[in-house]
Image 1 (tube, rainbow, N blue to C red):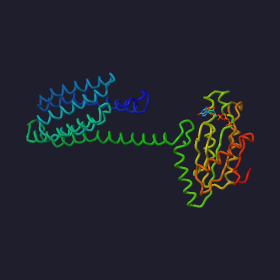
Image 2: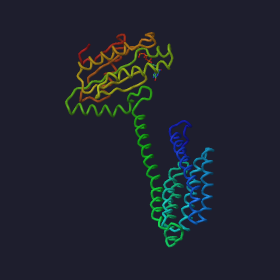
Image 3: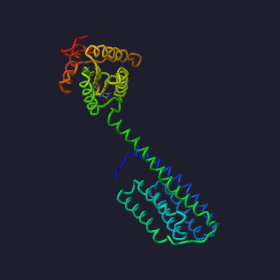
Image 4: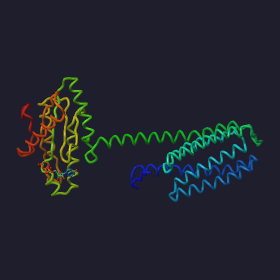
Amino acid sequence: MTKHHPYSRPDQVEALKFALLRRVALYCMWLHVMLIGVFWHLQVETLAVVNIGSVTMWYIGIKLIDNNKPSLALRVFCLEVALHAILVCAYLGMSLGFQYYLWTVSCLMLLDYQLKLKHAVIYSVVLITLFATLKLLFDDVTYHYRYQELVPYVHFANVLICGIPMIYTISHIRKMTLQQRDELAELAARDPLTKMFNRRYAKELITHAKESCISTHSPLCLVMADIDHFKKINDTFGHGKGDKILKAVAKTIQSHMLPADIAVRWGGEEFLIVLAPCSGDEAIRRIEQLRQAIASIEFENNIIKITMSFGITSWDHSESFEQAIHRADAVLYRSKELGRNCITTAPSMSTI
Ligand SMILES: Nc1nc2c(ncn2[C@@H]2O[C@H](COP(=O)(O)OP(=O)(O)OP(=O)(O)O)[C@@H](O)[C@H]2O)c(=O)[nH]1
């Protein structure tokens, strides 16, 4: 079985599951206390005595959860429900519907993640087979107790009591699964520090953006951007401050993006921006606005000055992504050579 870090999300989910189980177990324990009286009143003394055993098992299970043995507790609960259902069917027959509890337990067994899937499936199949066997063994059993006319209602209540926890549990698992799926998709797509798209995921988006520009015959531009002298900033103010600056720069970049643009954390302090659809002139105008916005970010009362250099190129539809990125990189390098905090455009575009 996979070992998780003690503070990781899967363990939080497990903790929540077992807190819920404890609450349900407490209700069940009190329900069985009540049933001792009910069976006694119905003159089914044997089952009243059986219920004393059930209360004891629920109590032991709750204590196991409190002692951090929730998985063992779940097995005790399953055993109690299964034994109880079998005994009641053997004693009172099938008309009351206690056999349905075997279905509920067989589903719950699959939720015990400490149990190997193979074992959980085997136990569940055994329980379902027992369910089928009970019908063969005890279908003819009848018992004459008080309030016979209540039998259909007890049957009705049992079906609901068995079915509702299954609906509740499966809907809960469905919610958690979808939530975790979204979280995983988000984790796979974004850089954890800046929350910008990461390189791997961005490539898919960029391909898509290019195809859309080709189909509409629209121009698109690539921009490489890099924070100036970031090593010096890290060395002077520390890596933690460097991270905060990266976050602030990313936020500023994202606030300058239009819905169809794609902003990516390309490397350490390097960003790729795809403006699609966008003409060369429009790209230069918009990136100049961004350059000024970054240069005016205030850190520590302006003690830390941040600037960025940019390289812009238009992306010809017949070119590969690598060719265009290579050119954007080359013009970014030129911006660095020219003294930084400026924009350089590829030779095919007009210069600012
Ligand atoms: N704080 C922080 N620093 C990072 C991160 N990723 C990369 N860096 C740092 O970014 C710096 C990049 O340094 P260089 O490639 O030398 O570039 P530069 O100092 O910005 O110089 P120019 O690009 O030439 O202006 C290195 O010191 C990296 O450690 C990060 O996630 N957080």
